[in-house]
Length: 231
Image 1 (tube, rainbow, N blue to C red):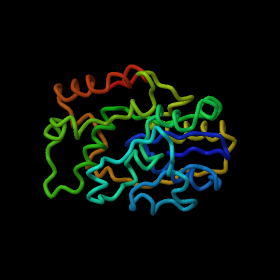
Image 2 (image 1 turned 60 degrees about the horizontal axis):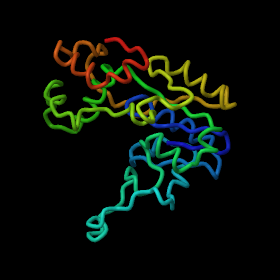
Image 3 (image 1 turned 30 degrees about the horizontal axis):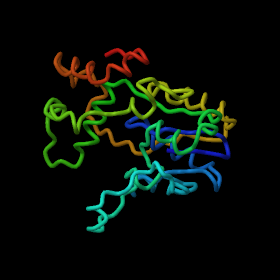
Image 4 (image 1 turned 90 degrees about the vertical axis):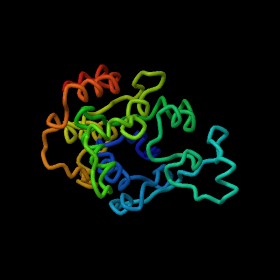
């Protein structure tokens, strides 16, 4: 997640939407007062400009760490809400921390992806360390692990609340539109980083049967309706 005072924009980071590439590109032009959240050590290696900065926050709405974790001195991770601003942070929390004036006046954007294609990418990402990768249907049987909760990142009260939600399927075109809007046309290049898909075939439809296709239709009905995605 990036909140740039220098260029007056807020980037909400979703899952499996080239978000690391977008974050890497935008962090390179940020100023010293901008907020850039940390990511995993592996992803941070891709950033060539400013690293994570200004993300720790003392705010009454920042959740406190559970007392047991404090007692046992468990380390606070970059993705824990208790740090302040964090990587995959929902819009409602950014709005609460930044305040209404910044939220209403800064350009707010994110990116989304066809949910069926995104699910295949998520499957490969979440099972990449398995010695024996489970089947796609077996993976989806556990919704707690398989569900990709992008919609609640860019929606408030079940409605998309940003100025623009770009399409992963036309990433370069939509990213150029974002750059034009924030006054950075021609100044930022989108790198290709964190390409962790690893699938043997590019056709996501091959992974689905009727049951799993309809399951995704149910899980992701909100983004399918909002952006008109088709299988």
